[in-house]
Image (tube, rainbow, N blue to C red; front, side):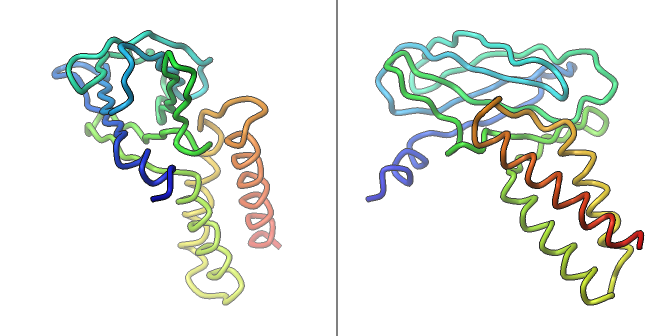
Length: 175
């Protein structure tokens, strides 16, 4: 079995809102035999922060205080185990779109944005549903501006490449 696939089967990251609060509960399920891990997280346009999380049975669980920023849209997560292993979702980070009102947590990936860029490109080249392409590009441009990334890592280069593609497609529409 592919080691990455096997790792994905035994590791799970779940996010929940804490009742009556904008704060988040993070639960990590892992079969890795360590007693704690370091969770790294970044909210929209904030610096990376970290917290050591202790094992509680099969789970690692911690609460994260949501910062009071007006454009809170995204959280990025990754973690390292005390044995030196890092789980950064294969370089893509664990990303969630946040909405406090209504309370929504929606996982996404930069790969999802690659699909959306292709959808917008097809709409533009075929000259059909241009208004949908405009909305897609606007959404992606806004989100990519606030998506957390790790400096000098794959997540940064993927984000930057997607931003360039979005801007290129926007310029094709405005011609």
